[in-house]
Amino acid sequence: MKHSLYFAVAFTSCVLLTSVTGQGQTTFDAETQAKILKGFQIAPVPLNMVGRDASLVGLGSYIVNANGDCNGCHSAGAQTTFLPGKNPYFGQATQINPATYLGGGDDFGAFPDPTGNFPHIVSRNLTPDKTGKPLGGDSLQDFMTIIRTGVDPDKLHPTCAGPPDGKCIPPPFNGNLLQIMPWPAYGQMTDRDLQAIYEYLSAIPCVEDAGKTGRCTPGISTAASASPKNTTILTRQFQLDGTKSTNGTAGSLTYAWSIPQGSPSAAIFAANSANPTVQIGQGRGLYTFQLTVTDASGKSATDFATVNFQGN
Image (cartoon, rainbow, N blue to C red):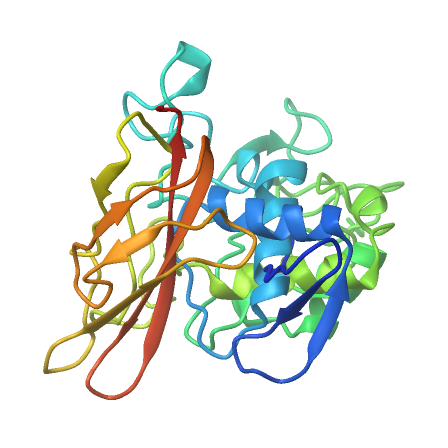
């Protein structure tokens, strides 16, 4: 299991970051602020920011996607990790497959002996279920206990009391503990980093378990979808696109584009439309644009577009 959480709002060398709920402020050093902003820039899926601490979500994304490569194990396998034609190992531009992102299902084979009558270890689904909590509804305290101790709350592979039967793990392995997940290493992380991971995992879209339905909330939900993402541009003027955002209620969506603090500034024309025009006035660099959509019931969702301006 690989995870994380946090988001940035910067002023100068020492910046104040505020949660999306506006409940208090925390001071972060410049390096952490940079990680928070980078976390939003590399998040491969739209994020549900309603009621979440934005700084934790951004930091969590940085840990999960840049430090941990959690999706490397917690997707359905190497063949599903990237979209067709977007595999960096083939020299292609990288794009994660959102349909399997952190949804688990990677079969590591029979443990501890692939030739024996032992259970297959399959990576777990880390995405939030109908409760809005990740890992099948685990609380933050549950999550921290799992990472600190390695205890398996699902008890999928108990210790064998007799001969191996294809469902149990033989001694000296302890079936109460996760056997492949590197929890001894991740358990050394700080409480803040583990909280950030949990907050980020709570913000990503739900993925159904392989071969099953009913884990995710049925129907269309209100979700923001901002593009382009991680695109290099040479012209100072271009358009943002929020038209792939979805509306979970009757009525129309409202759009609000802005620039997170810590990102270079730019002019956004028609910032309350789905396709505003941007004019870059500063120099080369990575620019981030935040899209917040709100449906008729008042529910909001947020996503981020990023462009790398390399023009004159």
